[in-house]
Image (cartoon, rainbow, N blue to C red):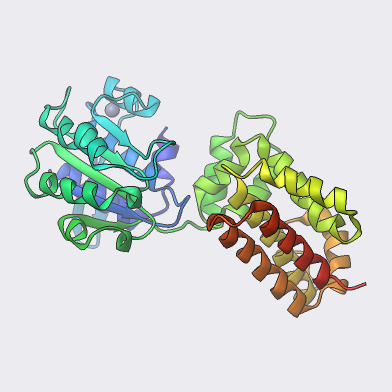
Length: 351
Ligand SMILES: [Zn+2]
């Protein structure tokens, strides 16, 4: 667990949070912002765990001439164990229900505003972590504002959001804003290796691919390694990019049906993998160097495609992938959006 809490690679940010705990200067509201997969949730969970740890460990750090005392969770006390298992009664997660379009005011009243009136089960904090806080309805944000203006002393609300602009100005002005930055490939790799140490099914190749795919976001790398569907998804994407030019109409339709299976959860990854493929082709076409290529095991195919797709063609294809994504999220028929994409790929491959 120590590794998980210490591998943040964001010293500035974690020092600030650890120091706030020691000095008892924890704010009542935080906005943790950063791209999806940057690890906002992990940072929030570790912060909450450290706040509530019963055996808190304080380390002195010398920074310049000043000494700074920082708090670290022990990882073994009852509170830490519950926090790690995700069953701590004073760490409450709030997220949009699957069948709802947003986090409604009723929900925020029940799970946060009213719940916050009840004192912590144990310890001096009660931490509410709102995932995808941009999904809070405007009414829910307004209702939440009252709690943020006059919070019970033990309440800490952490809103996780891609960008702070997605929240009402009044909420932003009440909260301390913390930007969770993306990580270097090296740190992502260390983290993924550590997390998958005991999993013999994860190969060197998987780790390498996951690190590139992660683009500094641990969550994405973990999603790749954790999901057994990913292998299948990768295979389906490969089938399209390698064979589309020679496919019959029924074969194309089969590809579309396959892609549709990912519609609810993994469609973004489907398009991202596809984009990554064409980025590899572009990279190889311009550098003739296999080093930066992600799909290393397909270098022969990449080199062949680099000869039959022009720079302009690659640009067109990348745009077509973006367009397909937008069309599908705008509820254009899935089949039409995909047909247009596949046609565009075919048109831009010469020969
Ligand atoms: Zn502890």
